[in-house]
Length: 313
Length: 278
Image (cartoon, rainbow over all chains, first blue to last red; front, side, top):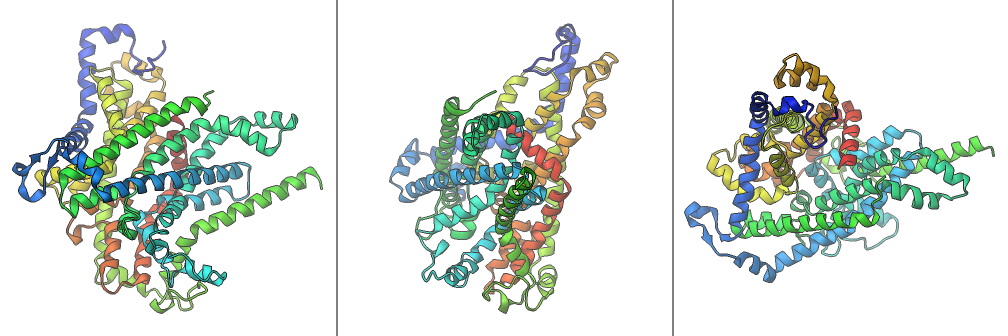
């Protein structure tokens, strides 16, 4: 008897439809789920509903629950004349559009090389992976020092190479965002590489051997075997990277506070700022929902696009 | 050149490329480690002195026993991490089992709800959770970190995927012998998903230990801070000492690296698995 693929149960049909056992199954199911469900409702479901309702209101904490004033769509209209919001929106896209493709390209390259069998494979993997498991706070603190314009190691090094005016990194409005992007690429390459390695190892060696016999070069093998057969993995990495890139916060809050000017203010940082520094909770929630809708739409769009390039075996 | 020696040469060149890349990657960590043993005066000397001219352990002594209660931050982090991990593993296992192996009414709708919230970024819920915790009266307590940390839609989904792979015949015979789901869960299913438990444990440890946003918003008293927030208190003082911050950072990363080294195989397998199955 085959287990039902959707329900995954192994009970014979007869037993499942029997009334007594059916009741027992119900009880067991809800018992097993109970603690998780209570937590889920309290810490996930209620906050989501609450957040949705609040996004149509004007509220500060001081005035208490009675002070909520419903303002309809006003928050969502105000956003379009709010410079900080608009800049944060643009910056979020800027960060995402630049950091995700570079990180994916680098990690794919690294994964292919490591997969080609090198010495000290495990060691290399470990070193490349280390930034990803480290706390963002410790990382940000180190990079803040490395990036300091006048005495930081990076600029001292650049000056010793003969570059007399190295970039101001996080203190310059043109370079602050690239600084965050460099740091995030540094952090994500190892993680993406590990996922891609798993994908690469699923490709049968014979394909490459056959192609080699037919006289296909390295690049051609990469283009017509590696990429198509890796596409489901690449797709997964792309989706999770885009979602992740829309949610950067710690590095912004610790390194730049959104500045200089508005140059590194991203949506999550702005939400935090509006809620906890300006005390406008309703408005902050309305931006949260814009962020959610954007992530949702982008994921959906990528899902649709996958038909065009993702190759399923 | 023979084919074999050409292969060795190629392998060596690729190794050198990858080793240089890895060394560049860990350079910030090396700088952190070396600075943690330096005197304040030597921090910014150039060219970078990877091995300090004068090695001192005073920074570590100051971090642990100085004015800033780093020792408290550590205990707080251990407490919050251990309790939430124990909780999240238990709830994810139970819920995952229910979704995979028990046929009960309303299951599919509920599972859809769990999946849908995976799409919802945690950070967009900071404001409503802040308000909600104030009313639940758990704001500025460790419960504000522990309780929400005890459930995970991701963990539930992960565990369900693992339980689904268990063959039905195993529990079938037990059912015919009259064993209930609790018996099957504890005696048959749990021992079989140990690898999944270990990899989820490492995932949750890394996540909980490094969490910055939740403590930032839900804690206000310095004594209750966990390590990530605690690290920043070294910076708030007027006398920012880079050597102290770096020593503290090294201490904060150590447990993660140890856990990761110990469970590397499981962790990589876990990533690979979640990566492929999406």
